[in-house]
Image (cartoon, rainbow, N blue to C red):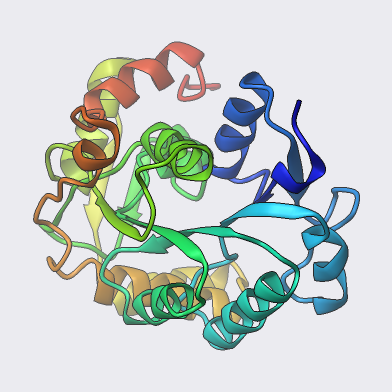
Length: 278
């Protein structure tokens, strides 16, 4: 019999990793509370008055911060939330962190210094960005333009992240562990797009442009300045080659190799999400 004290709060419950974690926990019969603005009780990172009800009776938390740990004010928010989690009786924190981001490492330190049991998932870029986020539309249009050159990234499958998160939230053996998560090989964005094009039998072009030109394009789309700044930071700083080396976090956490990008491409292509609607 599960008690209320064993309920797990999943922040970002509708996101790429969060919803996969929720699915796995529910399938295992674990009590889950969804942490999102549309949930009841609602959770909003920008409204601290929502945190208390979301944390009430919670044993463990999966902490996924939106939009990114690199945005101004994120560290202070993570500190405030962690302090409230401690005061609410939470026993375990699992943080989704980002590889190669100084700000993310500062957030990791907050979690590590909390006095709680912790696990950190320091992840590379998600493979699912090509099908569930900003990259889907250019893939569908057949013209993929980014301000990144011949830099390889070991894309991590969100399914692997979710599997590790569930293990860390529910099983012993992951206490005070930092898992650096990458796929088993690094690909350039051009190579990744080529794999998608081959699997879908579509003509998809990848073009590299300057950060200046990319900023102008985003400004023409009238995106908020803070969003543009974040996107350019991720492409010009994080994607400078620092994250190309592979890490063994998936093997350490699960005792098996990470899923390959080609596995993700085959699974995703079969859903039809990349089919040319034209």
